[in-house]
Image 1 (cartoon, rainbow, N blue to C red):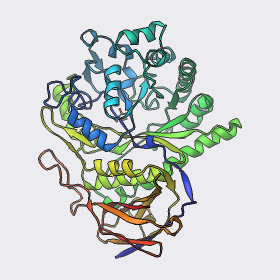
Image 2: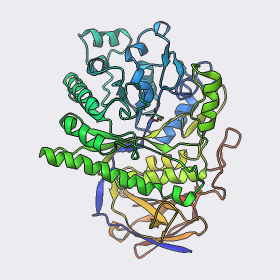
Image 3: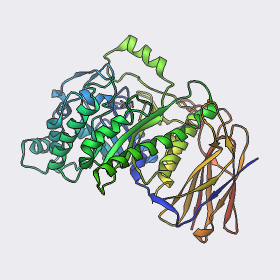
Image 4: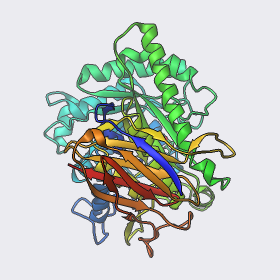
Length: 502
Ligand code: AHR
């Protein structure tokens, strides 16, 4: 049995956790909207056509903010197409996903859906084919009280009160050649700055996310952040990061170590923000919005087949990754990394939410179910609220083909607002359990509350419509507390939540 030790102290804190790190993402892509959250005629559909079974899963997952409507989709999208009488809304070719967009679900419907989901909209504006003027128009439409053409149009369309959308993205992945209206850093920096100014002049209470690189491995990574931030630093609040991992090579020890790269990515982008801060001699700190993250690779072949047979269809079954048990472990490790970096990562959006690289799957006309990755996310969102604690981890290390000195046990700890402590922890060891000792002496009287474990003997185990419970958390061994030290056993390859209450 391996042994690991975590030292916690209630005075050694990182930051209060922004609940928006448990955000998610719905794009007009595949069956995320049509056949996902929205399916009129389904036995569970409500009066607006939203699936209530999906809403229940979303509410139980706990996503305080949902990015919308894209993604790549937004870079060719006209927001005006998505408001007003549904029967009069245009159908358009979406060049991001080679789909026909019918605009049956638009801004008002999605806003209503987020209210039903106990969430908030994070709205992305199109800076691909459009620019500052359309960006400011949609802020005015959504958030201005009344008395102007656009705000009165919102009222005429059924929303008397302003929507009060607080969080806005200045386009999406503008550094990528695949993006509709792809831009150089210089071009984007100017457009984003002017859009930001206008949007904030309309509503000074909003917060803005400027596009960082679409990935850590982009050739322009670093230069892009530096150039864009040098231009728009004073006008924006967050810079975006996106990262998807895969295990195409079937190398689990390396796959599970990828959260180390995630940590480096976060530190590098924080350093780039601080470099610009220093250059500008400003006190303002820019924080990070990790607004797309997940595992993504299982569906590549299926997507090619869909486009071959059904290009320009509506609600095509695109990017429907079926997640296995090891994917859930990496998702857990990524969540641990966000909690540990709570001083810089203020927003994170699991991409995406329903059907498209998603924790929730549906069959059109049929059931909905939770994929493996649903569970670490739901547990982190439920118990990972409060203050992130500095966890000093002493763990055995391993080397893999891609990484060296990988801690076998990785963990994050949270001081919950009720005085309880929650430890999130992954044992990366493929074969051996780990005896974990946690120093809780500084917290006074704590008692063991529960230990929840996500484990399956088969790393490729998946949940399906017919077998939705294959990978699910189960109770783990009880922790013993002796003189302020808790001891608990983490099974080999497992995600663990260990909770102590006051
Ligand atoms: O989440 C799927 C796609 O991944 C998004 O549309 C895009 O922003 C990213 O490349």
